[in-house]
Amino acid sequence: MGQLLARRDGAVLTLQLSNPGKANALDFAMLAALDDAIARVEQDDTIRAVVLRGAEGGVFCSGADIREWSALDPETFALQWIGKGNELFGRFERLRCPTVAVIEGLCFGGGLELALCCDLRLATDGARLRFPEVAIGAIPGWEGGDRLQRIAGRGRALEAVLLSREIDARTALHWGVLNEVCLPQDLPARLDDWTTRLCQISPRAAAQAKALIIDDHKDARTAYPAAALAIRSSADAERGIRAFFDKTTASF
Image 1 (tube, rainbow, N blue to C red):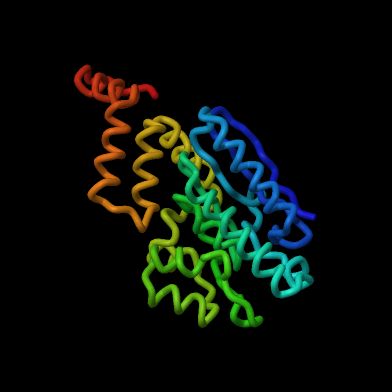
Image 2 (cartoon, rainbow, N blue to C red):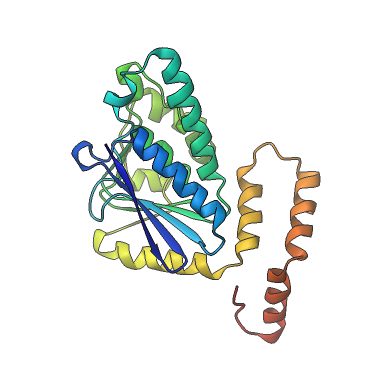
């Protein structure tokens, strides 16, 4: 049974996928722990950024645990594993604060689907991404193909899914799937730089901006004025504008 290890460092919550005997394959226990972690973030405004990763220097995730889901009957699989999994991944994607996936080594199947729910993806040059599902008579059921399409385009999403192509870090960077690729020894400093920046920005502005980008079904005519009204009416806006005119750095 896998775990999701949580560590709090100031305003940053790090969630570590841990199922070492199965290369961090996702099982019901890990999904339940992710649900709990999401609730924790939703209830604690002092958490300003969330980092999702495997153990330092290890794999990110080999996918969904096939021994777990293959034992389910088709209806239970569809409703409990896929349906509830998508509700969970959607909540994670819509978290108010920025999220960062740190990818070292392989990131396959359901693990890649989870990484695509994050706002930003930082990887080492040894990262390997792949959707292997169709080769075993399955599909990326946690909306991974759809999310990849929105990032990399329809043709590349179909290439990745239908050919089960393994995508190296440089190709994934070129496709826009990864935001940055670095050497393993440079990863801690790059991650610290990212999380430091994310914790310095206005949390209210970040939440509003993120929600607007993620919502593909919004009516822009009403969504943007409503978001602008909400942020302009906040203390963050007053603090930021005052700092601009005072030629100082706003502290949120």
